[in-house]
Figure 1: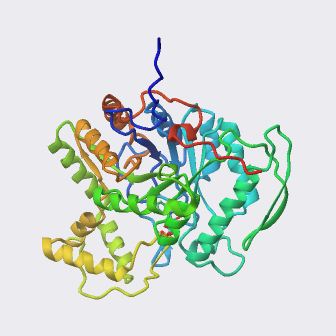
Figure 2 (figure 1 turned 90 degrees about the horizontal axis):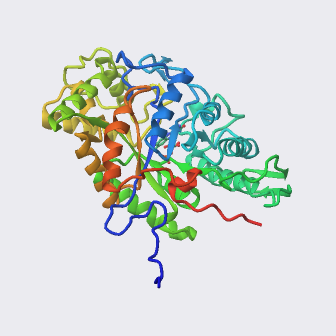
Length: 447
Ligand SMILES: Cc1cc2nc3c(=O)[nH]c(=O)nc-3n(C[C@H](O)[C@H](O)[C@H](O)COP(=O)(O)O)c2cc1C
């Protein structure tokens, strides 16, 4: 006689005695100095072969998704194109459609802003990706933080932050109305959305896609951004990659979900992190140090400081002390970069750090902007990643490599098998759609 079956864990949930399973995503490196462009192994950021290499690596590692950021205007510094960044980046959805043809299970996420687009067109493009990829599309909804970028698009005026977020929330709601508009039997039904930002009605051109709705990711960090995520997102891409900051962020956002009738398990929180591996801990630390010095060249150090101080510092020695002059309150010297926090407060913090540790300009920039989050042997990194998830600092990680396109090869070859051994990561894809990888339910269709 067989007794009742023990309850089975939901996908992504821990089996008794096993660690909670994490989610992993691969961030295609950006155009800025996180990527060490001077490294002879660095390839093109535009050739399809680069996107294909990273996507195939991520799929070999059974990652949840591949991620593309968006930058809509070439950055400028002191009125000129900022030539320390590598410039030029293809349009994300087009790249993802091409990747859908060379991958089978990997989720495909594009960052596309909700400030300059229209719901009907964008909903159609994401639904198309979801159909063509068999349910693997994700949309990272960003609001774009600067009017400089807006000059490329705007029809006059620029929305302030609060309005950008009300527009984004309404944009996603309108897109969901469109994705829901066909009956399950394939009959198109009229849709209508009447709101403050959009007043649209008609018929959508596509049936409901395999995931119901493409996965929605959110990446802003302000209070408005967090509320938007709590109300509308399936995944958050956050910068809070340290244990303490991660735990505080995680608790804060998960707490907000109840207001919107959602449970903490309806949202995955994934910080962007970097990993440096070595055969010994000491070798890994040495490699990490080397990478930091490559990422922050003497010119990059001065330029980073100029972005905060808001004044020309070209006369300063990068190996000398920080400037005595005070930063300007609202620096406009650099255009097209996302700003985080108040420059004066940042300058104060950096001065205190330099003074306390006797650091030069370049050393200060390296210390203050260090991006190597997990440094160690594959075993140490696997243990630390698992610990982050266990202690409620993340549900998984978006890995940002410092090399294009081979920067995750070593992680997939050496860390993923150890995570699997620990039971902290899947050993096979269990479903076909990105929602199934993330352990997220298919959204209920609104009548
Ligand atoms: C981790 C992270 C990644 C982001 N990636 C992008 C991006 O690729 N493109 C973009 O235009 N904005 C990006 N943003 C900017 C946000 O969409 C948002 O415009 C910005 O953070 C300002 O909103 P906030 O004040 O809520 O943080 C990113 C933000 C974060 C925190």
